[in-house]
Length: 359
Length: 267
Image (cartoon, rainbow over all chains, first blue to last red):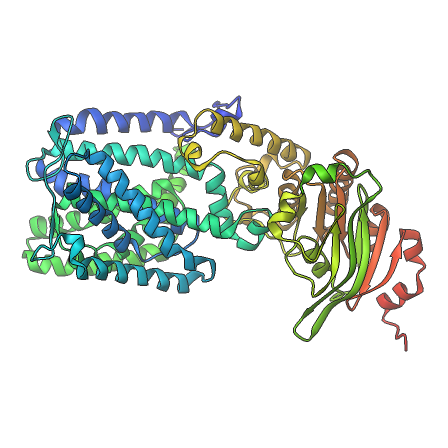
């Protein structure tokens, strides 16, 4: 009864093809946006910003990117960390080379640079598929991290190999550097995620999205109906890397502020967690990208709070338990609901449609 | 070379001529010196026992296999082989013997993929989804909805095709091919594994497409009563060789064809 579709008629194809065709979804999403833009910025503190909101937004961006490539186009990739590193180092180089350039423009250019690198590493995808492609993208992960570590030009010949962000402002408010207030970094990331989230959804419900899914589901049939395989796969690599590059750029400039490439963009630090996000969230689902990111960001915090504050374990023991429980949950999840949180949500919608009646 | 050139061919004139097509995979000869022609607007059937090379023949026509020798004259232009993308752009659509649908996508999306070649908006406009991009989507949606109406697919519009029963999947696959508004429709065993009613429905759809949309149909089918009923002309293959061709009534009394089907040795 709560989630009732009855009585909602779409009288034209335009409204039928809308992102949120149902009134309930429209209202829920509008409320979410109102809270996110008009309420959260006024109450957000440094803990919420650094521990939850900004990482959630950045990982959502990366998850959308990887979901486009893996979930929609069916090309498994383990190179997320490498492409995020491209975004981060592009941002650093652009910031130091052009001190007057607006940070928003720098972030977006970093996305385009990552897209170019993504196309390059996507070239093998025409010939290799599945696990073999995953291994090939693994090569991009290790090569790119190695490159940013070994070529001093990328970190401006600094002694430590670290890159550090300098202060940049939007409308007079600093969004990067130590002085940036929590609401500014949060809003900066939020705007990018909302804008590019909509762009991704629009691509998915258009021609290019259907081409990706056609390649994913049956590449031979896709070719027969006129989908060019190489071009379609490379577009997926480019757009996926664009999103991942932007998330890498934000990860460096807005979130961490200073980082060292082997540590921050390691395969265990980025590539696997983001892959888990889209698997747990739901492959081939926009909602899944967000749910997965929220799950991976929140789970350690919830577990830690539970074990340290409620049970009273020491922080070190709690950390060990946290890793164990994390792994356990991952396995349980894959067995119980291989289609991810997005599927759980759609099952819940089915139930809500007729609740509380049992039929 | 494009659709317009095909549209200029008068009905009843040759649209595809296959000349001495041979195809071999290593030592296996799938087709040997097969020649026939398809006329615009007809229902043309390729029949023959299992392994006769019928599907290979279709694959040659839409460029999925490259013939080892022989020539293809397509719409008045002679070439050694076809390319899948070129074939699709020139208005050749096909269905497969083992259903080749996009299983994770809904019926509607599957049919919409049939319109991909006709959608011209660039990536940026698609991402914005405003103005012309939206108009284009709606325009193609209307076209697809007509196919949905024609094939009675309304109730399964939003269902992922992987979960549909076999007969419906076959119908969706026909729908995807029809959504391309093809000039030539290649059907590889569209009625295999169907019951009598489903076969009747399918025959009706195929004939309507042929009569009203004026689509040329090249069909592979094992059910002889269907083939004899709906096709204008038939070619018979056996072991990769052409053993007969002509109108259904001629094929019915052709000695070589009867022998091939009943397994009589010609020695």
